[in-house]
Length: 170
Image 1 (cartoon, rainbow, N blue to C red):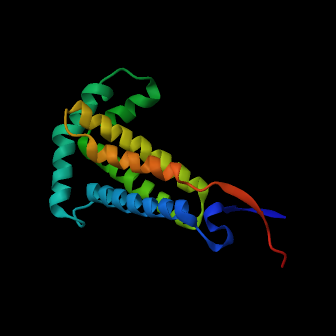
Image 2: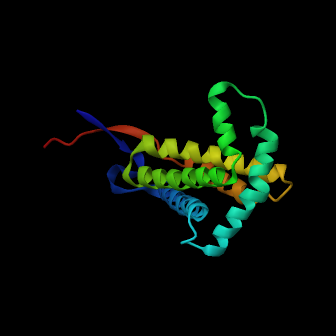
């Protein structure tokens, strides 16, 4: 019988690439998780939360409404676009996607649940492509979300390959 095992865990050694992958996963997971929670609650940092609320009300939601949500869309999407034109709902959705994606990335990465890790990684990449586009549309510095997007790409590129290993006989 064979069972799949992450390459980084084979023979008890992660190797340099596995260590880099783990460090990047922890770094980006914690950073994005913090940013997501900061969009949802003022309990983390009251000043940052107030800034997030203001940014979504005055800049982020209006630019997305102008560029995307005001367009004619097919029936299933029209209600979603209408809902996301509301700054509070857009901020909360973004925060939940970031916090949930970060949790999935950390849990999936640390416990070897590949499906959860990869699903979370692609979800977060989409969120940070949108965040980078937002800053470009606003003619602001896109480097904060673009940097996190690059780190997410590095996490994907340094992910250890999976290989089949022979299960130990009991």
